Length: 107
Image (cartoon, one colour):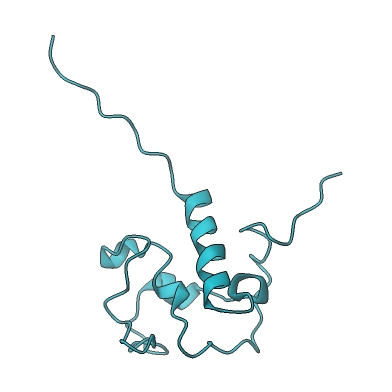
């Protein structure tokens, strides 16, 4: 029998908390993860993130699909911004496919 660790990046998935409010001054979910539809790499700020770390398209129909489907959890958000960045960074690392080596041409 395996036990899921609560600090695992996958531990909070599927356990969204509808009562969880966005933490002011956080923006971790808009920084730590890749948003490929916007060409945003992990670790970069999203173009819609304001200097005070608020999303300018939150709640708007035109925002990226990944943002529409994103569901925060207490495990994901942690007790503070640093914990959220660490958790989401670990999730990003765990779910990013390995880069394929490029074959050198020649011969």
